[in-house]
Length: 361
Image 1 (cartoon, rainbow, N blue to C red):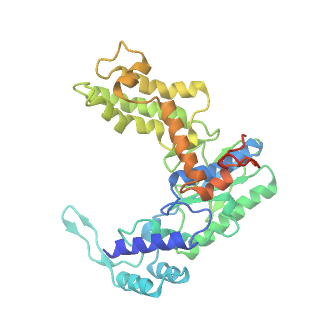
Image 2 (image 1 turned 90 degrees about the horizontal axis):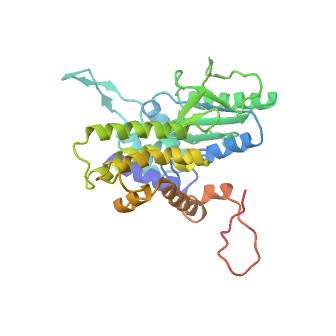
Image 3 (image 1 turned 45 degrees about the horizontal axis):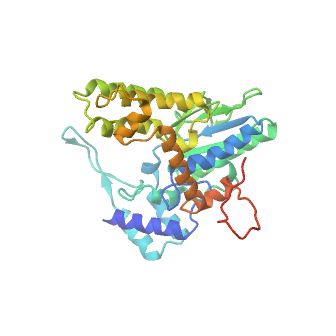
């Protein structure tokens, strides 16, 4: 119950006050995993489109939710403007807590629990804990929960030095919060690389170069385009597994099973990596086409007729509908803050119209 009360208080405070930097998105109204990815990679693609050599680094905090010291957590609540009663109740609730480990019926001795974000309150209070260290690097930084993304144009020595300085700032912030970055999960993705590679250090350790990196569930590579092939391959594997495990292929079972198990692999965060070329569109559509062909004895029908019989839409039409919904959110809905930087409205002195006509390009 206490965790739930703290969660509601933290969410309300985050919505009413500016408690985290512009780089941190998630677990607040108008912020989510997709808005983080779109905002960050909009900056990456802008650099790549200009022909700039760009490095993207993915530092990851080690056991972040378990390592947050209680004392620092409560003191930051007080500095961030939480009312004194909430801060005192949180401090009293965290003081004197203990924990133990149970394995196969055996339990360890109790030990004092002096760190960790309150269980049940979700990641929202974690934003309060780590959201005060963006100074000087907001334009190059993206953060979601304990995941961090850092980008920079590195085709000039001063650009590479700026990336290293930003990494040093992140390391100092982590030390101030008594946390550290995971040595096994710190990699650099080099996009549009045309000059000799430059190494970076984080916490005294070299950051390894990687040809691909999974960022919040989306696989990114040096050309920023492998996600489409991977999505089709993974969804086709799942489709094959479903087909082999089904005893019957009735219209009552197969379409809901496909929609719940297979199609999410083809549409996960698709607003970020959606296909632009016809070959990529057909690659994704072929997975659904094969799945529809085996449903309810619809083999003789054309693909469009099968979709009509099953009450489904093509993936291309679903992406269009999803893009329109997301565009509305960026222009008039919950994502308006980010939409100001993503879209440029057409200036017009005409009295007729709604004022939301967008410039192309």
